[in-house]
Length: 123
Image (cartoon, rainbow, N blue to C red; front, side, top):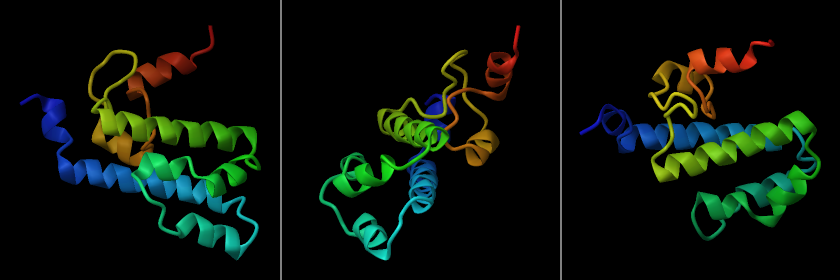
């Protein structure tokens, strides 16, 4: 069994799914104008978490998010897809595992600290 497979057993997968869904909810809470909108978000929707992410009430709130918030929401959606495909927790640049501490701090992280730092350096 690979190190990555060992690291992302069902318990860790569930932990990070909860963290990502909570982060998404927090972003959407910032723009939900009414209790009714929040009730729509919390109402059970058939399907998996990807289906719920594409629901109409969420889409209406997303249209009100600012640019940075939309980018964060896109990053969360992408992280949920990576989690489902087994690619979550692997650096998109060097393809090494991302430290669990970094993922817990930034659940939607695409890159390890080293690669993220290298990308942020301005030439």
